[in-house]
Amino acid sequence: VSYRGATGEVPAFLTLPGSGKTTAKRAPVVLLVHGLGGSKADMLLLAVSLARRGYATFAPDLPDHGDRKQGGNSDALSRQTLLETRRSVAVGATDLRRAVDFLETRADLDSKRVGLLGVSLGGIYGAVVA
Image (cartoon, rainbow, N blue to C red; front, side, top):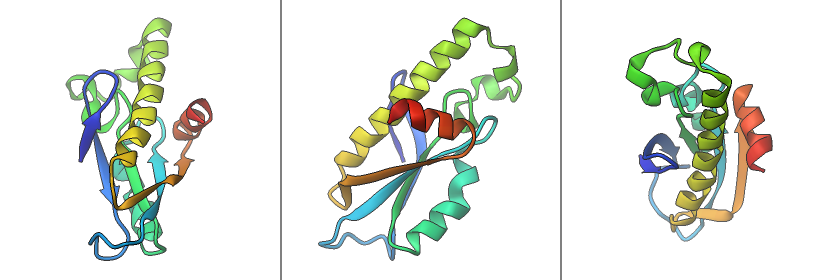
């Protein structure tokens, strides 16, 4: 799926528990945030494990990661200036807040039960977004 972020569309994986069919019960959601140099794909194994336990998961790509890499350049992050890094972090934090806004539009998800699990850089973003 994708949703509107701070600077455009943000690609993400949405994993639903069970068969994925909408039921009367709204699933709790875990926002999965990958680490530095990673992507939403890094979170798939964890997403499947959580889905088997009744949780929906939502894993977006952070700015300059995954499908959002600038020109596919894998070392673009290491060449950023301090100002560019600050901007990237601000965009990423805004994107994660907008991810929660997107989740609130879904009738099959319980927007009152949203958690965040971040790996490395994702954990830092979690502290910023909380």
